[in-house]
Amino acid sequence: MTTRIDTRFAELKKQGRSAFVTYVMAGDPDPATSLEIVKALPKAGAEIIELGIPFTDPMADGPSIQAAGLRALKVGMTLKKTLELVRDFRKDDNATPLVLMGYYNPIYIYGVDKFLADAKAAGVDGLIIVDLPPEEDDELCIPALKAGLNFIRLATPTTDDKRLPAVLANTSGFVYYVSIAGITGAAAADANVVGDAVARIKRHTKLPICVGFGIRTPEAARAIAEKADGSVVGTALVDALRNSLDAEGRATAKTVDAVAELTAALARGVKGAKQAAE
Image (cartoon, helix red, strand yellow):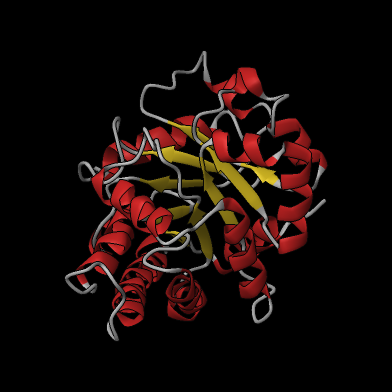
């Protein structure tokens, strides 16, 4: 079964270019503004959207994304409301792939079968659940694949050749390569090191490989796009959003534009990589 993610990567491959993947937190800084931001991302050049599920104990997230999750939780954002946001987004956009990224706990509480049915009906294409290792595939990964959703795995600099086959076994959509060990937003990605890592993973899989963590500028996005099938930017966009808020942490007239403008600049960086690679 072909998902929107598969279709998008096939289109980009024909065009000979890398995907620009954006991450934002669902419900940050409030549900209405969050929907406007998500709607603005494809227009600004995002080809795939990762939507964070707010969670109280986000252990792999850096301070920026943790704070975004807390802002969303404070205004009452839930997994159910995250799926509503996806449904609202799909009213106007049936092409842009949407991936939910987060932790297993909210899904477990929601109920796996109910969640998968509701996510598929809302228009979700894939899941990145950072705290479920391959050993737990029966919990969510296998049911998700059966429901027609991509299950996207993280590979890291510490994922060696012995571990990779287990990580890749039930992965679909794309592989998310975490370019630096540690939490999100911590350091800058080194394009040459990333290039070697991507080449190594490609020996084990035909799936596209997107690289995230440590990409904050159009130049960095371009350098990574020359080495990988996609560049993922999250923390920089979340920071742009935060910097647009008022003293009470509420959205201002600048909030949506702040995220859209940075997205457009980063997208130009990624698209510029096509010329460099030719």
